[in-house]
Length: 279
Length: 279
Image 1 (tube, chains in turn blue, brown):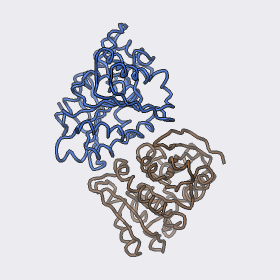
Image 2 (spheres, rainbow over the protein chains, first blue to last red):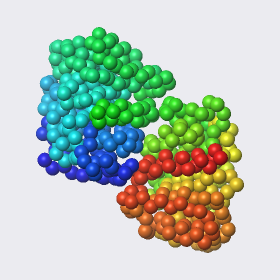
Image 3 (cartoon, each protein chain N blue to C red):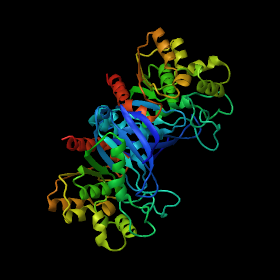
Image 4 (cartoon, chains in turn green, orange):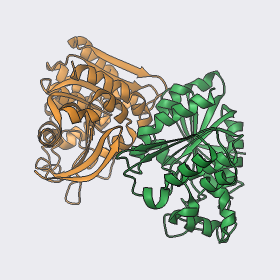
């Protein structure tokens, strides 16, 4: 497996890199970023995965997420994948919430999205294997977080693989794709009309069906333009309450859906993960 | 004076805004950003000016500078202007280091750069008056910093106006435009061939000619691609030494010229300014 280095810059005593590789899962080149903190000079470090939202690539959080100071403080490796396969030979849609930039972290079963839109396999299997082989990570200590569509990704991937991810958090996640326009459009497109097949990709449905986590942390801005129609943290709150999953839901007055919101609470999330990953 | 709000986002308990106004100094619309920390609810706050480098607008540091956490901690208002006038009716040059995006913080005296390239007057006079009138700033407590061409701007504007700016720092500044290709090209273009007219725009020459500051802080990456040919911190070191100006020159091993470098030491600079501005 060859990984091409697109850039490496020293930052906060560590190295912020951007890399590209030919993905078997998606059948395309995929780009991702990795921050390796200075502690990695002395041994493997825990890893925090960050899944991005609609329209984003690895670059948004890498440039605007303000995670490096906290990761350098706590000794955490931070990995930011892309949100979908991309390229001329890859299916797409004119809208921002379907196709390239909008992979929703599913393995598609429907044309034209098969065979490339295999982001579940990419994030759960292929990229972790690459990271484990090429970076100084302690793969027994993994956490996962994300924003919006990527918050949905972090919650669902974390809940489906609770043995792999010790800590799960999200910023303004799509709490229940089964119950919002973004989710209904994406899941019907990628998975077809049988809503039973969608339940693997809905945090609330996964919890109803028995998935558990030791704790969840969610931050949500109250001025988020997508809060009521798309995000619906109250559904996650209800599912966690019924399942006795301790959910810390921080409603942040006046914050919106942007990286100004994410960066404001990024250090809190990194510290929360670090506490669990280093325990 | 009408100022148009382009965006305002809550961040770190304060407000990150981007604004546009019609500048008299440049004869163009000018865009700038201002972060107002939460402390401003209780009264005027000190202000730190940040001048950006070649090719940049207000957006680079606003998105990638990672100053908001430190400004919210110390109660500092952070203002980031653009680097030049812009627009279809404004002179330009095909190269990245002259014309639009490369104002060098001078008042141009040469065609075709007059009348628009009046960045000295804009930064020293017009924008401070606007900021003083429309934001909760304590104008008796101003500091100035910047990066590369903007580091040159911060040093020269600070040294020329030592009664106005209590604290002056820079990231990888062009220490002496009189003695590097970027400076020779820009100053000859904007000011003409009489090098005596350039001395007002050269930190080392200003110090030789008598300008003083209580202290200077400079961070410089040792892996900066522009270090030897363009930046030359050793010239500033020599000038400060001769003039008994206490210069703290931090050479940062392995850091380059990018915002990965700037953001790594931004909190240190904000804290250094805060100590002096709040004394």
